Length: 209
Length: 131
Image 1 (cartoon, rainbow over the protein chains, first blue to last red):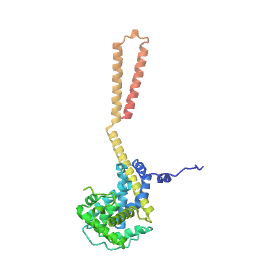
Image 2: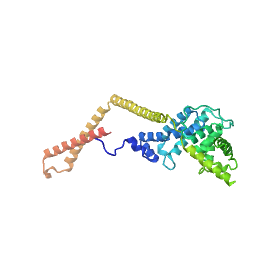
Image 3: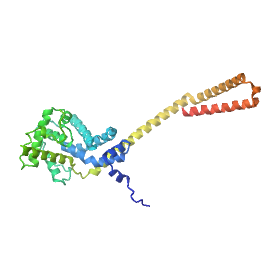
Image 4: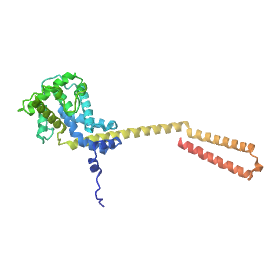
């Protein structure tokens, strides 16, 4: 007998807000957490790759971030977005791994060598494609700093603290990174973003210094 | 100057939007399932560890109980306590009650004492089962 209007558990979860799913997951609901993984998996993986992580490493760290998020899900109180909370966990894990393996010298000024990334996004949106392609022309430090502040939602002060670099160094990386991005993404514009470093912060992400 | 600022803000806003739009991964479902599999595996391992620890603890506890003959001791203790209590009760009843004034004879008293003893044994048995 078919019950009219009956929904499968997965369909029910799809309609739930992140905060509600997080509450369900905190009560031990692994299916609810699975829905959160489906929703935010690509965002976390994308963020880590944009920070400069190799695809395998990005996926590995993203998985660890989700597992850690499940362990700590009771700490998420819905004050900010779930995606933001999750991204911060992933960023913290990636930077820890980064420091441990010393894969990246933040003071390096030369862009990373270009590598074909077969597993990168499908590039359906031209803007996204431009961003991912343009980010590869930034130095590792510029790339990490820009992505942390614009993609991870960290303030300049938070990003400097996370990367353990002086605030001035971070601002320099961001300024140069934005100039390069702008050149790559809007070559006809010719705007200089160096005129106002303070305004170079993402909207609503002012530093606390 | 303000034109430059406006253009800059536009670029800033566009950049934030671009970062907010996650890239689409062809293996997104595979990634999600691998995370949930790892979660399930962790859960199973945890359950297995807790179950095994409980089983080992239980076996050790039972073996210790058997080795020290705890049940026999408790039984003898409870029997001793029961007999002591019953005799004390009877003694106090005989001392403090004036039997002739009761509406029943000595048989009734002994029956009551027997019932009280049974109740005591029942209570002791329950207490041993509980703790």
